[in-house]
Amino acid sequence: STSVGQVTASLQKLNLEVPPAVEGSYPDGNIVDLGRNYITKHLAELTGVDAKIVFPALEWSTTLDKGDLLVALPRLRLKGDLNALAEKIASDFPLGGYLSKVVPQGKFLQFWFDDQMLLSLVTKEILDKGAQYGSAPIGVGKKIIVEFSSPNIAKPFHAGHLRSTIIGGFLSNLYEKLGWDVVRLNYLGDWGKQFGVLAVGFAKYGSEEKLADDPIDHLFQVYVAINNDIKAEKEAGVAEADSIDEQARAFFKKLSDGDQDAYKLWAKFRDLSIERYIDTYARLNIKFDSYSGESQVPQELMEGATKTLREKGLITEDRGALLVDLAPFDKKLGKVLVQKTDGTSLYLTRDIGAATDRKAKYNFDKMIYVIASQQDLHVKQFFKILDLMGYEWANPKKEQLLHVNFGMVLGMSTRAGTVVFLNDILNTTKEKMLEIMKRNEDKYAQVEDAENVADLIGIAAVMIQDMSAKRVYNYEFSWDRMLSFEGDTGPYLQYAHSRLKSIERLAGIPEEEYLNAKMDLAVILGNEPKESDFPAEEYAKELEAYEYRKQKVSYLVKVLSQYPDSLRFASKNSEPSTVVTYLFKLAHQFSSTYKVLRVVGEEHDVMLARLTLFACVRQTLSNGLLLLGITPVDRM
Ligand code: ARG
Image 1 (cartoon, rainbow, N blue to C red):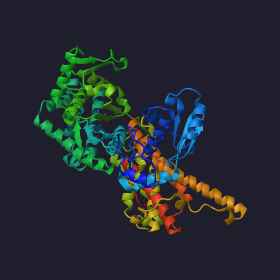
Image 2 (image 1 turned 120 degrees about the vertical axis):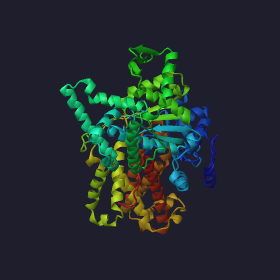
Image 3 (image 1 turned 90 degrees about the vertical axis):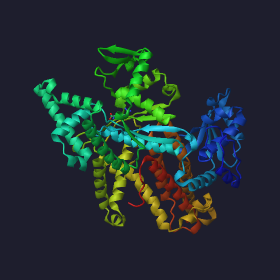
């Protein structure tokens, strides 16, 4: 069973029993799991149902006013009058300091955590763990490869690459927080006939200076120019033998055969582009462990793959080309080409070779491909082929290979149409943000390093827009919406963070002090109004205000406690939106609580306790933003 470690001491202090840890729970880092373990133990005792069945049956309530966890008794495979049973269990259930109430509702039971218990344990947990709050040692000892971004060097970086970068960056951070050994892999599109096209274009339009100065931009210019020529040739009906296309093919053939000059040019394009990518990725807090690419797939692995497929009787030949018919296994997968007539490799074959290469090199336990849904079929095909080749790790039942797909970005217009220059997007966002900030002159004057702050808010805007909805959906790129401070946007989250920072700044209490504050609900809320102290009418108002404050604080603490779970859920569905939605919930709850819970001007111990509560909110918000790849700003 899992050790309860640090939490045990806190439990003893609060006179709470230490429930046995159910397998798969992480009570030393997830207070909700601790509560689950407690409920599981007693529910198992009261019903005679095995803890292994009870634990996973405990579900989140949909809204905060329905308690913390609930269980549907039918899920416990119990029979008989379940409504009556729910009543009975609710009245017999020991609260044990963990719960404030257990409420029967038809065949359901609602469990409400005790506010004081949750406040004490959650704030302690956050202050102890700091930047590590939310992590859990779920993947310790396991290795995961996250392949993402993967732009094509001889073609433009497009919105699909932007999304892959953002989502993949997030998933890498997430798995790291969950204890996995993460390899961030960029699989560049750095091979294929398009390099021939680019080389021909470069001979015609290229400039060494421009290439050195801005390789991505220059290669794009060349790409556009030469593709125009190709189009013109087609319209003019130029003979195949004299065409750019033919020259490109010849160049790529030379490159494939190891020609030194061809190789040097190719390597220059690749190296200079990577250098530039590194800077851009750094702006998004992303650092790849390896810049691999289609060019790096060992020839013998691809040959080995066709050999294996042949041995398994899966290859059919058609005029010198090699095909695998996947239709017998899955109609939708059809027939795929694995080797062309001229013997050169294909995108698909390279993916097969690359996967086996990675297994040999890294011996991963899991590998994620973050690739647009336009390539769903391609991914299904090469996953299936790997499975047919007999690799255990490619067996879908093992769930070791995972395709994380995503929809398109619509209406993204830049100077080059649908082409996105990541740096351009980030620069434009930054400029627009700077303009918005300048509108508030007083505030603007107080921001040190406004350029940097504008950059960080702008990046948050782009990233939150991308990660707000489920990733399979397409979304409309909109400057106005994403840069707004109202609604669920990146700037809104940054604003919440900077407000939390300013609360701490304005209070002027040294951090050491509030980090040791006694977290007493009664202190945070202030005295409960006594009837004798007020005229009747005022008393009712005071009481109402008090109750409202109490509910706000209670909900805020509940939301704080849910952060570790949100990470775990996000790792199950590979959805950044799970974390983004959580952060909005936290920011909204903070904002409405802060309205009724002032800090400055209160007595010292009240101020201290409230400050500590908000420091916990800030820590959690900061952890979440960093996880998404966003650097939180302290002032804006
Ligand atoms: N470079 C490819 C493209 O831009 C994406 C590569 C995706 N990864 C893969 N293993 N196929 O379309």
